[in-house]
Image (cartoon, rainbow, N blue to C red; front, side, top):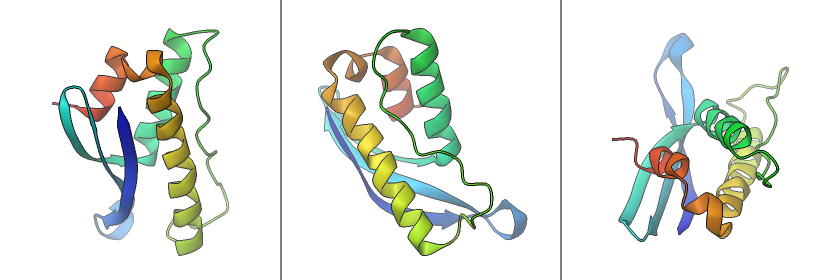
Length: 108
């Protein structure tokens, strides 16, 4: 399995504006091409942590309370660390093959 965040995109308008992360990759089932929000990465990490206690789960960057999530430097830094999280999941043979990972990369 191989995945990487290739770009970020601002979606929505007004108060509903948010950043999405465009993930591309592939695994034994084929191509992966999805958009995920930061909150979905947190939910995925928390689900893995709850279902697989004792197994190393790569970290996700923490929430930033006082920083604008629209700041370009902040977005690039978060993108880098989310990409590291994905790399950690992909290189762990066990985590890469879990049903939870498949739901994250193939939500339909």
